Image 1 (cartoon, rainbow, N blue to C red):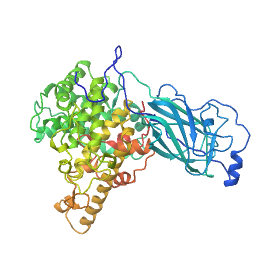
Image 2 (cartoon, rainbow, N blue to C red):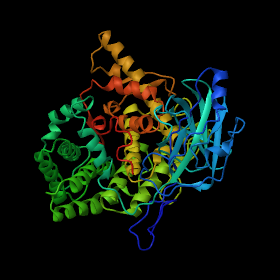
Image 3 (cartoon, rainbow, N blue to C red):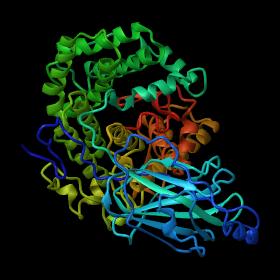
Image 4 (cartoon, one colour):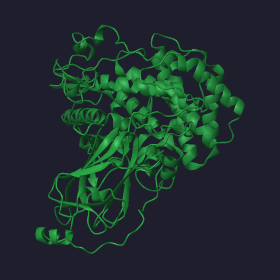
Length: 582
């Protein structure tokens, strides 16, 4: 059996285990004291003990609670040292005066942490600003969260963030009353290793859809649902053929059928109208019966684009509708394994949007077919390809090279001398730059969309890829979104001056990003991605993505809400937060 670097195999006697290189962590809050600076210090010295009480807050979907080896702090009040934050006693605390006060707890060994709990002294009366950073060596810390405490309880507040860690650093930056940082207790729990897959668990979960279903009379879901139900995709019937070609009408029909099946599967779950379920299954069955392969030079890309939404539809219908006969499900599964899997399993190595769509398709197929080996392979491919698609200065003077499944670099484009050409000749390598930025922004949007989709499916299955590449992905999103907003400004200004909306003048604008001084827009895919990423990083982790938020707000009036593998993101994921967390 060949394997991708870092992949895992199933332990004997179990279907398989998730073995993830991440730590689930939590967003912390700090608590200060009331009154002015002097009064706050006096209150922190108050000897009145709080009554002993059990740590509150129901456990999340994590494993065993972890023990702490030690704690240290940048500043400590006499009698309220760092060790008192890990003594399992809510009547004691660590306190330190001054914005930027830090406490670092040591787990004793690197762990796959999925939850951190914090009880804030005085937490029922004030809110505290804070950041969380993780480290495996105690020297380099990577920030994973910035936020504010709830301000309604002195008991444990539980939060989820992720990353491999032995050390957890909480930095307190003031509260609504003064500059004290006071934590009564810190807890942590390890990531559980569930057997098998969670279903439905391809891009969207039952819990996420239930969250949306309960809010369909509210915005933005009301508008998004209306758009979905009015779409021709909601009533589309199958157009199956044996050998669709990507660049011919049969190839477009296959892609549209796949999106339609997914659209109808969503609408079945949100409305309960069985007509949507029957039409979705009719599309899945028709292609299962007809498809024999894909024609043309770009057959693998066509297979990836189709498999991405088609497997989402199959996953939802298999696990939310009892009217799909087992023999038809088996036929659909055979099609995935014999036609789509072989096309996407080895990636490509050229422009990254191809590879990232293949990675998402492979991951989706693996979840639908309960294939742990190929799921691990898809995760490893994502971990290798994302650093080769979005640049960070920490990569060195030139970007990371894309890798093949055997760990070898691909073709000449991967050498430092050829890298500028492979990256379509940017003016300079800057943080957040995509391998396709200087090709055009629509291809970047397609690549980033597939990257985020795969990370969301992995998150539903207990592997937090979002956290592993937090800085890289958010930098890429922000640079793409900034450029898109600038492009929207340019288009609006040109149209206001009388330029026709379909003019070639609106397809490029001057930019210092690329060596040729131009930035190309490409097709219409630039209008689509972002809502899933916004939910993952802002709603779940408290990150700030101002350019992404502005881009999504500017994009909202456009009627186009689906294209290729990017479809109905705002309907399924807007504001869902941790709904569906494993």
